[in-house]
Image (cartoon, rainbow, N blue to C red; front, top):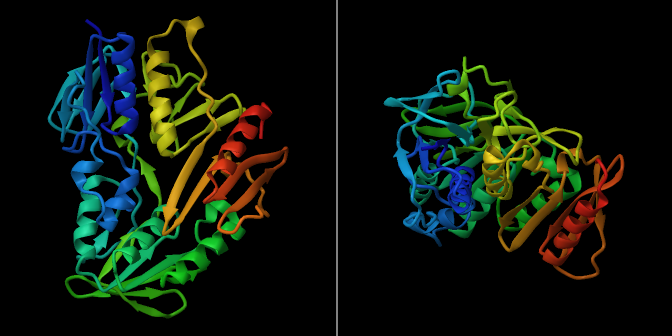
Amino acid sequence: MTNTVIVGGGLAGLRAAQRLRETGTSELITIVGDEKHRPYNRPPLSKQLLAGTMSPVECEFDTAADDFEWILGNAAAGLDVENRRLSLTDGEIGYDKLIIATGRGARTLPGLPELDGFHVLRGLDDAIALHTAAQHAENVVIIGGGFIGCEVASSLRVNGVESVTIVERAATLMPLLGPDIGRFAERLHREHGVNIHCNTSVTQFHGESRVERVELDNGQILDADLVLLSLGSVPNTDWLAGSGLELDQGSVVCDEFCHASGHPDIVAVGDVASWTHRGVGKRVRIEHWSNAADMGAAAAENLFAAVGGKAPYSPIPTFWTDQYDVNFKAAGFVTMVDSFVPVDTGVEGKWNWDGLGESGLVAGVTANDNKAFLKYRRTIAGAGTKP
């Protein structure tokens, strides 16, 4: 009886398990997760759940009918590839095939003082704690103006938090999307009452038992009874130390079929994987919801496929972020863009930006314009050239 063990109980792991069950390629499927929750939908954590329009139960995927073995609240602690054994914080299990889907954890600040009032947002428990704390917060400071930081600011203001401040060390908010879109986002948040400090870093936190003030490198001191650290993420791969698997900046190195380098019975999927993308001609890492879902299913098929039957995984990345009444969507390879150029849509309330790279259009970003987003995705997919 073939036992496929999936390490990671998020979307990528769930989609991999469901694809294995659909194809009937693995008799036994075991999902190991460090959280006590069954898989849930992460995008609402910084949006609807935080705004109070969705409950934690509504975030959970319906897995009642899924015939899987579940080991939850028990994190992976080590991997013995030669003997095909997975060590857990409590016990160990064997496997025939292994799917690594442990995702990424929240990055924090070194030397953070031991004060109450600090939060991160990566998992469901984080979101519940942040939502609860925000009900009583008067002055919220968000350190990091990327997508999550901006979404949280939007949700908190919509939910009635009086004072919300974003501190971002880059020149604009959402720096991945360049200065023009960043300034657009900054205007949007200012219109909704958010205080913004760009080109600014935090130097010190003040307080007795809980954080009370945040000091900036320009000397300004902000009142704060809740601080969100929205500083990006780090791969959850400490448990792979000594396993022999190749890692690149902590991510599992994979070939174009999602196999861990040199290991035909192991694949890695989602945020934790760095794989060779044939359309790009180099290794990429894509940390988006749609990629987690698609890669989980694709890798599960390749894990059991014959050598000649494997399909390279080469998606066109897409992602979205909702802030107030604006829905941003992006298609393509935004990290390969040299400049985002605004496009006149001729329609009030809709905005587009061409993402231009060495070979021309490599990405597109839209705001409240799904038709243009779909066109960008088709155009980039049909180009067939390396950005």
